[in-house]
Length: 303
Image (cartoon, rainbow, N blue to C red; front, side, top):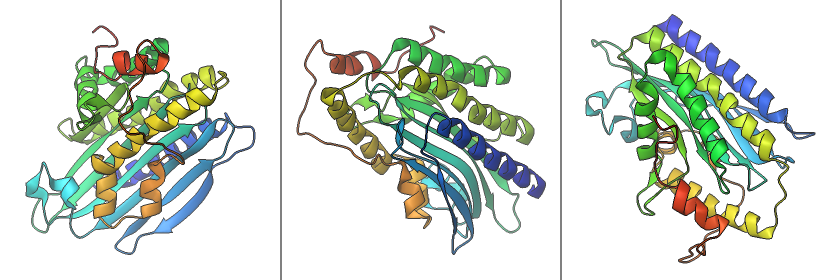
């Protein structure tokens, strides 16, 4: 298993490099700054943050590889048999918040967990996915995003995209708002039934397709003119992003419950967000279109 862990670690570090290089290629001057850190209980990570760019207001692409003596509740909620096991967890997680309200926020994550207990077989699994959160959505962008997600899944079975798209729609759902966080994508977790090689190949396919899915949208929309109205709505909708991450997100909860590095865990938060009391968009406006058409799970590719 140790050799496989080394292979996953090497892939994740190279994925972080390639994503950072692709994203900062859109910036004339702004660059990712790197912060190496160690965790007292075990492990550490490599946090990279870009801020105040012309395209990206703030974004983080994090690598972490941590270990501990007891899996936290967020990791054992659906698998109570893993309670009290030692663990090792590694992954790349990223959130990108652009300046232009016509460019969506995006999130991606790929990860591997190992749970150990003396005298019992080691248990491992992989998870991850990517999802898109537009403010002023374009259907062609949403179709491109989902088609790329499907392309990432197709070598692994015709039903894989639909299965993990559905899981994404259900996972990134704000129950207290009765709306999805965005237009979805892929979400998978606890995957080990394909065997290590196939699971690792799928994790790589998902990780590698994120830039293919996101960068063309950034390039197409980053120069779209906008004004105070669009910026105000973007900041209001960013509040939903904060709500989801702090109330529901298992990655955030795992990091905080396991005594992780707070600065790296909360780099997913937007630099600015707004809340308003009982606000609703006016019917027939571009803002209403987001609610009426896009914040509802649907079969984008007609499969």
